Amino acid sequence: MTTPDNRRHPADTESQTAPVVKLKTNNETVNNTIDSVNKTVGRLERNPIIAHLMRAAERFNDRMGNQFGAAITYFSFLSMIPMLMVAFAAGGFILASHPTLLQDIFNKILDNVSDPTLAATLKNTISTAIQQRTTVGLVGLLIALYSGINWMGNLREAVRAQSRDIWERTPQDKEKIWVKYLRDLISLVGLLVALIVTLFITSVAGSAQQTIINLLHLDAISWLKPAWRLIGLAISIFANYLLFFWIFWRLPRHRPRRKALIRGTLLAAVGFEVIKIIMTYTLPKLISSPSGAAFGSVLGLMAFFYFFARLTLFCAAWIATARYKDDPQMPGKSHN
Image 1 (cartoon, rainbow, N blue to C red):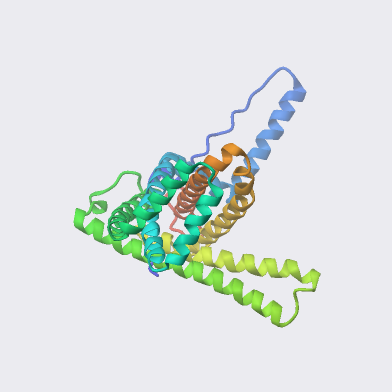
Image 2 (image 1 turned 90 degrees about the vertical axis):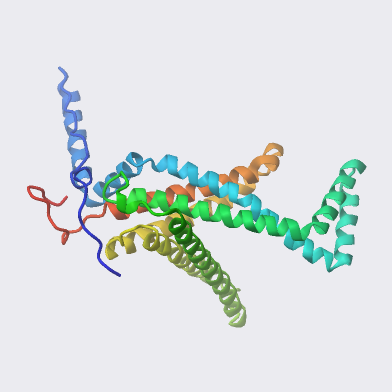
């Protein structure tokens, strides 16, 4: 891994924290309280961790991290439609080769749907999907490929906006359109491979862990259950780490510093696991109500994409604003 150019835009190298306004009143007690608050805030701002988080949050907001996150969420949700088309086509091929399974589905529809018109509509829809499975699959695959490449391009530009030294794009950042699409296609394939590896590690590790527990008859030992959960959590975080490491290492034009990349990726991996845990517990409650049953899954999916996008961009800003003692010191400036 190479060491990137450590030059920083002046707006990024200087502390952007506004000075604390020192208010004074005629009440001595109030003045003492204000002075105490100012000192506390000053100590927090001088803390390296707090200062780093403030720099990252400022860059995230200044470079439209919220807007980029919303755009990534929109394109992510839009990309689900062709993926569903491909899934329906695959299901059509399976049902076409298993007429018994198809008849069982039709019987369950007739048994569970009381309205004869709705049951007939569902039956005709499934039959049409099976008959046109090749066309639906090819069209869905082409649209999924196109939307996936555009999704990757938007994610790349959003990460680069947080990572590069200056906010505006330079002539070096502009590419020919065929180079851009080819690069995004390669990046999309790489991301899919990283995602498959991540899911493979999580599923295989979970199955192997349960198999080992059953073979050694350790499932009856209650005090070991927290340890198994922690092991599973560590494996899931490691899988997340591989996914985000690929994003932060591959998408920016300049390679980030190794120390910042490792720490920022770990922050993203842990944050992503927290998001998954929260969604796991809140989504079932969201879809339990009648209105949630209709829109809960859609809202949950959009919230998942949005939090993933914001986490990715914030960690990209965190990596880009990392400062260490061995960084080149700017003239007249000292390290925070």
